View: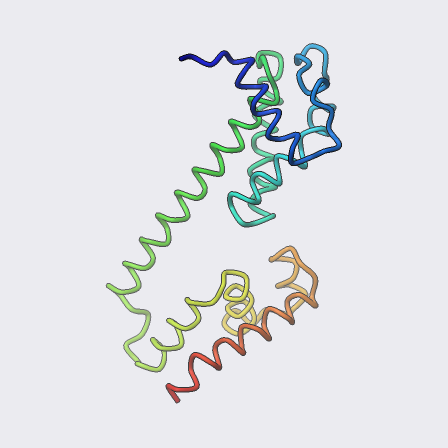
Length: 185
């Protein structure tokens, strides 16, 4: 059974409207000739970022992927039949690619780390492994603060958060590392 493009767009529009209740489904179904690009952007940006954020787990990555999708839509806007359907497909495709690439990178780095350890010193390897087990944002904060010697304001800017959040991340990361390493030393 083949699904018509308009039916597919209606389904995708229904899903996105459930994420953003302020949007009006009949207005979303208008063709691109009736809706200017700015209106599509204003109507769909938040719901697209939310979809991408839920998929990637990162606000920053989600915003980048959605901006790329909107840039592609802008270039093709006159030729796209349904901007909503195009955006959903573009965002989901980009998110899927990002997640796959990230998983591949992790597998490669894990294999490389075990094949060529950074140091043969047992203490260094133990600490390195403990840092690798931290959640991503805590690991980034610890590495930037104590290995790269960045200030909290610079870390906050890099992570897209406030300096107080960086202090919290560092505190939780240190506590986690202490718990993991207290039996070692």
